[in-house]
Amino acid sequence: MALNTLNPTETKAWKKLEEHFKSQKNVSLQDAFKNDNNRFKDFSIHWEDFLVDYSKNRVSKETLSLLNDLAEECGLQKAIEAYFGGDAINETEGRAVLHTALRAKESDQVFVDGLDVIPEIFAVKEKINQFTSSIISGEHKGFTGKVITDVVNIGIGGSDLGPAMIVEGLEHYKNHLNTHFVSNVEGDHVHEILRKLNPETTLFVIVSKTFTTQETLTNANTIRKWFLQHAKEEAIAKHFVAVSTNLEKIKAFGIHPENVFPMKDWVGGRFSLWSAVGLSIALAVGADNFEALLKGANSMDTHFRKTPFDQNIPVVLALISVWYNNFWGAESEAIIPYTQYLRNLPAYLQQGIMESNGKSVDRAGKSIGYQTGTIIWGGSGTNAQHAFFQLIHQGTKLIPADFIGFKKSLYGEEDHHQKLMANFLAQTEALMLGKNEDTVKKELMKTDKNQEAIDALLPFKIFKGNNPTNTLMIDSLTPESLGKLVSMYEHKIFVQGVVWNIFSYDQWGVELGKQLASVILTDITKETKNQHDQSTQGLLDHLDA
Ligand code: F6P
Image 1 (tube, helix red, strand yellow):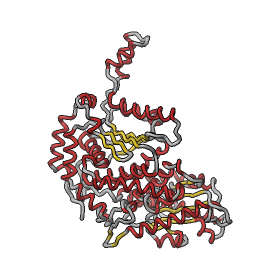
Image 2 (cartoon, rainbow, N blue to C red):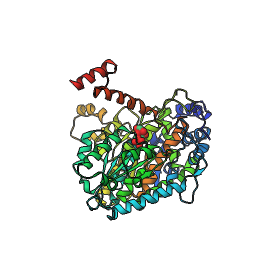
Image 3 (cartoon, rainbow, N blue to C red):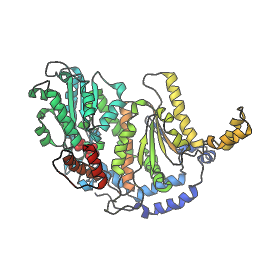
């Protein structure tokens, strides 16, 4: 089934939401809580080890019910079935979107073009298990008979961000292997990593869905050359493995056929960490933890697929975000994990969300007249509090934010964790409550400032408050809970794409830059002399001067 091509702004629900917005514009969150003793209970979802509190949002029961109507009118339920069922919902590339199948149970069946893909997924997983345990146990030896100590993931975009974020996120669960990530086509980046490595004890994992990506192939070739300065050609088989859909190109690169971990074209790059792209994750934390990550994602998949919209975490979060994006005019969303382990979650989600939903043509091929994908940014708390929080508290922009925290820390440093959690809770409270003129005045009166000084300082110390946040409180950071969290955001992306009537699973917008870079490269290497605009030409000349 193809997804429908309904313009959301033409639905009844959208029109009602426009009217409803007028009545909500001036509602204060503080009043909403004062008028409803059950607001926290009614506006939060407790599911497994997740508590999702969305009560500090500028929404009423009516808002949520209208947003639900919008999802229904946009055909969300049918779309979910098409998504999980393997329909070719990535229409512009003619592909299914089946990262969910990668974490399905062995007893499940998921068909693509009439073929059940589950047996092959489990065969690849088995290969990952065997390979990772031979590396971790030291059974697999390098070309001089030494055990592997370092793993280098060579990839970019989805072939880097997901594995890198998860390996960092699960650092607590890591084994003895040192894991490195080379992504940028910057020689300095490559050499900074290489200088830490011993070729005799390093495994290189080349990850590229297409195996045509300039950055990855350039880095892989440079690293191969470096390796061959220390070893003979036949040693490559012990030190280089590849993950890709493009088996021909892998062969041409010289990777031993046994060292190939295949993936399918129905896995989008930014959703691929669950596939063989997650090989570096499995190496870093072991196959059991990788499996637990998949299991967590699978439970969130089931929750998303089976739960009524008003209790469905990804649906509720997606719709609230639509409310801010399309009715309140919010341009961005901040993601603030209160754990250093997840400091790169915002960067990972930038690709997931912005590459998916940064579109301006609808599913009928028409130019869109409403807002789509939000700008994603963020950083880890409490560091972020000392960096950009000023703007969220007192700036002019509306920035809905997700606060993600864990009830328990991993090392059990009680004093630290209490302070971390105090900050976690204080920030969303402060963002909502703000501080009014009276309170600021009273505080200033208690100081030794005179009236004139108090009056001068007063306006700067007022916080308007009423800033919306979601709080996700999770029991603890485990492979399973991290799997749930990432899957939650994946489904949020899907819901928003359905409502906005866009194709979330292609990324044509990244192509033009790639094309022009290959043209400019031939100018830089002096093979050609192409015509450029005045600015680009001036810059090219300066580079050469
Ligand atoms: O940036 C575009 C993109 O195609 C991403 O979607 C993808 O994750 C990345 O490039 C890397 O692609 P590949 O895995 O094919 O090297």
